[in-house]
Every structure is written in structure tokens, then in C-alpha cells.
Image: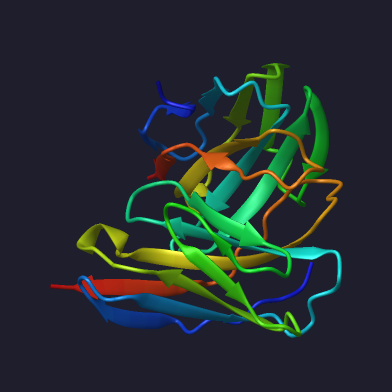
Length: 112
Length: 114
């Protein structure tokens, strides 16, 4: 699975959009981009995933560049409850194992 | 209803003891996992089971023995506990291992070995 690079930390003002970047320059054509987050003292939580088109759900939007070498997770109106570690993970479409390889992630601090 | 539940939530025990952590999922998923999160918050997979069959063992010491009595349960038994086993252990499940479905995680079991 391709390696990802994320900034270690970011701040965001409450009510503003949080834009979390992820680089995955070695991504291959059959690999998806997944985002999970881990709120303090909780288990990781799935947010969204995509292949090459932009995706949106009730939690967030995922913007993937045309060359697929980077992506941005957007939380449109960040709240204090969005403070968490956000993980960008690249995973093959058909995995023999289903495992997720977590990096260090980005710690997002939403401030009032 | 909790989708993936682990017990206990906290476990404090002495070195050398044997302990078990239980995990149950009510999602009807075929695949279950154990992940370990160490003191530096690094989250790493330990085991994966698909329909009660072991499919991943990520070079985990054989003091750790997962057991899956049925596809809704994946328990983790640890023998001869060591200080370095102190960590948070997360159970997870997904619909199956191959398709692009998300994984659901339990709330974690914080194991402290003293």
C-alpha cells in the first residue's frame, strides 16, 4: 500500500472550514484514499473514501487531485467535537487482508 | 446498540499474568481485527480473522493468541504479560476483507501491566 504524508498538526477556528491535506505521490491506479479520525480516548472512526472523483457525505468532503498524488479532507464547519487525529490511508481496492496501515496522522485542534 | 464492543475497557494487571480481552460485533461482518496503539499513539494491526479463519498475524509474539469462536466474536488472550504489552487494544470489524467497506472500531481496552 502507498505511503502517505500529512502535517503533524493543524489549528482551525470553530465554525470555519478545516482543510486537511495528504500527499500520496506513489499511489497506484487500484488504490483508494481513505480518511479516518480518532477522537481522544475513542476508537478510530471512518469518515470517507474515494478513488478519483470528489466525494461528499454528511461528515466531510474529499477532494482528490487529477493526478491522484494528493487529496484534501474538508470539514465544512468545524466544531469543537471535530478535534481529533485525522488519518489519511491509501489502500488497494481488493485487499487480501483488509488491514489498514495508519501513519502518524494530523492532530486537528478546533479552537473557539 | 454498540456495533463493536470490547470488554473490559480498562485492565490493570501484574507482569507474568494471563489475561483476555473480549470483542463482539453485531454488524454481521465477516472480518474482524485486533489493533494495538502504543504509548506514542502509533496504531498497528496485530491480527485479522475472516469467517473464523486467521488471515493476518503481523509478527506478534506467540504469547498473544486470538480466538474466534464464531464470526461475531474475536477474543485476544495474552500469556505471561510484560511491561511492554501496556497499550490500548482496539477490536474492529469490516463487512469483508476484500471489498472497499469501512472498518468499525470498538472503544478500546487500555491494558496496563505493572
